[in-house]
Amino acid sequence: MKNYFKGSIGVTARQFNLWIHRYVGLGTAVFLLITALTGALLAFEEPLDNWFNHKLAYVEPQTSQPLSIAQLHDQVVATFPQKKFSSMPVEIESNHAVVFNVDRDRSKSTQPTNTPTFQQVFVNPYTGDIIGTRDREQWAWQNTMWKVFWLHRNLLMGDIGQTILGIAGLLWTLNCFVGLYLTLPRARKQAANASLPTRSRSWLQQWSRAWTVRRFSSWFKLNYDLHHALGLWFWLLALPIAWASVGFNLKPVYQPVMALMGAQNAPKPKTDAPRPQQISMTDHTLAINKYQAIDTLTTMAQRQAQADGLHFVRPLGIRWQAEDGAWQLRFKTAEDIGNGRGASSITVNAQTGAVSKTNYGARAAAVNKAEHWWYALHRAHFDNRWYPILLAVFGIATAVMCVTGVYLWWRGRQARQKQRAKQQAKSLQMRA
Image 1: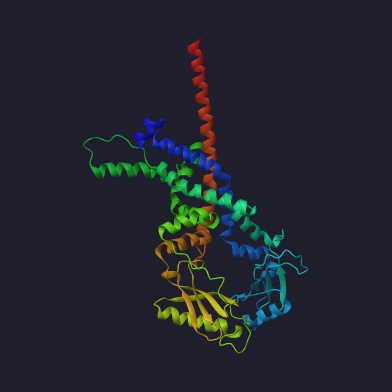
Image 2 (image 1 turned 30 degrees about the horizontal axis):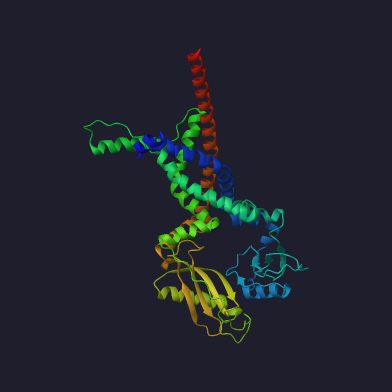
């Protein structure tokens, strides 16, 4: 390959890859810098969001028992009858308000409304009092982390920003491989009688230098070493996070690639199928109504998982599917990958109490499990207190790589300009 490049277009394979790495890096540096720094903050999204929104998020803990989640839901529905609240949390923290999210309005109506806009309701779990509501679309101090999220997701530019970041993620994925190649030692002539173990040892010794940062070196060497070493230290984390960003933002590219690798998508419901008449989740004639749903479905999920050879860990959230008259509980098993896309779920018919569907993240196809891994790595969806710290460090390291990469390009450009000027001066002298 090296000879082919040199013979056909006048450059070596290394020079060609260096050109790709340099200009792809320059083209994506600003976008990666923004997403790296915002991603470092989003690694601690929940505690930071609670801090910015402390007036609504926290309550004084009391010695009395909190009300049930169903009772709190009743209070929210009674206070805001014009809104729909299909999902409920499944646990209460002693010093936190209970948050109920408003269902997204999927209608395309453009009619103006006098109804106040908000997406969250905060309730005191001990008294049932409504602490307040939050419109996360407003530019307000309490919504800081929500704006950080959308800056990270689409640069606050909607679909255009999302596409830009999807392309940047695709180029970043490519650059992961190119950058790794460029850290490898250059081929050198070895003694003819050198044994294979000797040559391998020499090659590894040369490559080990790329993993280290020299102390007491010049500013240029420090930047050079940081750029190489950080790229190698975090390579196994950078690649899945880069590809996950393509999955989030550039689905026309991501989905065909994953389908080619054997990923299986969940079947879409038939929109033309007849729907039963919608029923109320509070209907006392139901086998499982709102007041029983969390405990009943949690028990059913535990039993079902145990029967299927899995280990139930905890419930994650519950949702009322009014169009089907069913409850769906998301839960985590010890075998699942993270607590996001890789989590499990059980769907139960509310009228009969029969399980209609069970989905285990641990039983997904191998390619889908790989997806669960990189999405969980990207969103820090793990029950692990240390991983968010690692993710934040990775975000800072990526920002450093962006800055050092631009600096190295700038120094290289200066050197190339000086070299070009010397050559021109020499050429003029020879002509004279």
